[in-house]
Image (cartoon, rainbow, N blue to C red; front, side, top):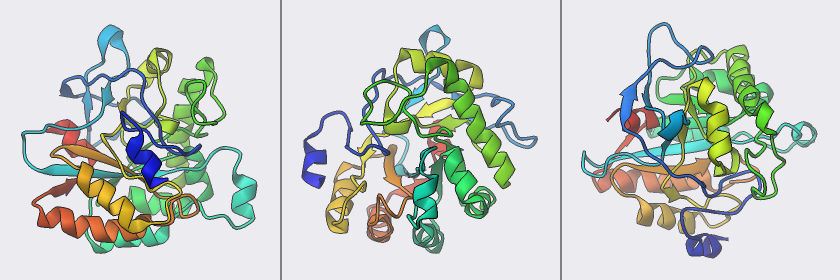
Length: 277
């Protein structure tokens, strides 16, 4: 799988519940804006991007290349709306060991969480949302795709896209996450103009990445670590996963990659810090 990932262009990798290529890359100038009511906090207004052309939802892929050696490690907490029976049968869509490693290494990180994940693991969602080391962002409720033909994922109809994102924010509040960020990662990384338009009223910034870790379904932690370290540049956003069953090597990857990045002079930050810089 790692070899296949290396051959794919434009930061794609396979995995039906994981990541893919964006269809309409755009990166607008940073601004500080009020998040939508579903994410608003009485005490903070996280940095977001200005709307794209035609008022479309803006898309952020990486930070500045010339404002210091910063990098954001991001983790997708994936669980689709129909995976409840698998969780009940013992499949683990969480990864407490990974979170413990991030805390032990004092790594600020952004967790893109599905609402279904928060529904299944409310205590963990609340713990992440209340820990200043982390920020929780939106990965949809259902983890269904917002475009057709997205790595085999079921699809959300255009008239349900906004509701799916807002339902995730509702689940975060129900779990006790006090201040989910106004950032959204498309399931599978798949989006098009229709999807960007559908989410404009929500007021989110869509967050993609420029470094694919390749941790999805990988069994070779050393290969994944090399891929991350070879890909990182100043301002990079690295996509990884917080799902034991689908990404079993990620904790080991983090324990390898983080000390090496720091030894190379990189400062680890949340996505909000990259957007706001």
